[in-house]
Image 1 (cartoon, rainbow, N blue to C red):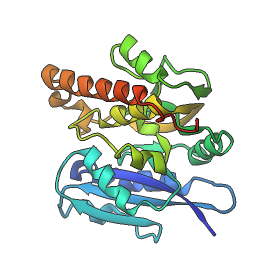
Image 2 (image 1 turned 180 degrees about the vertical axis):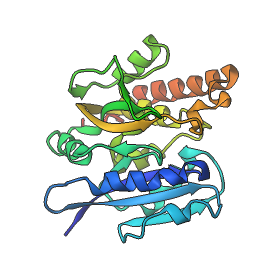
Image 3 (image 1 turned 180 degrees about the horizontal axis):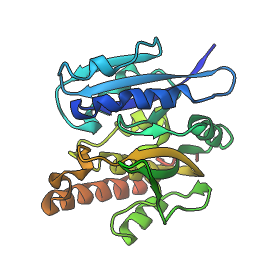
Image 4 (image 1 turned 135 degrees about the vertical axis):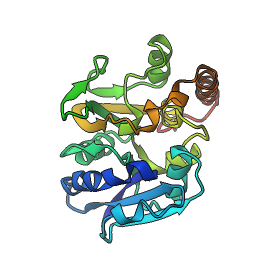
Length: 252
């Protein structure tokens, strides 16, 4: 019987033309015997612009829904997730070769861990790449460490939520991604780390594309009032979860 990793991609129309590159990066993945991936693509909206870019592959499913931002699209996509693990892949990003196998090994070799992340390189429009200067060493990430770093370093986590690989049961228990217009992936990452230990792979696992149309480059993303509200609820949720008795994943 084949065991699955579900790769979830939220996409809106302006980014649809990057889907073939994301698909090519999935085709490059080599997994252990008995494992395969399914790709669940969910449009944030109901246009005619995305479907033509979705590959014809039985491992790929596509659906649409009312616009609600990426977090809503990803959470809706969970309805079609069949894998034991869920991997995030934004429509405009690319996995590096071996990324899924490294994520899988991190969790199968460490049953007490619930999620994994990896090093990211920003992919610039000219094709060059830039790394992050605050990567932690490869290995386990203790409970609460992500929130502590995020608070101490200008609300920037030391691991990137766009690389998240997570046990599906815990993802569902936490309700998927937060209902926020942005920072929903950071909110999920902090919630996961509030109740469980994770892993960081020091080998690059994702090329994070920088381009003018991406949501995080828009002025609304850095609006001070909204950003403060997002960060306040993200932090509050993580702290409440950390204080709940019996919510430690893998500790029972």
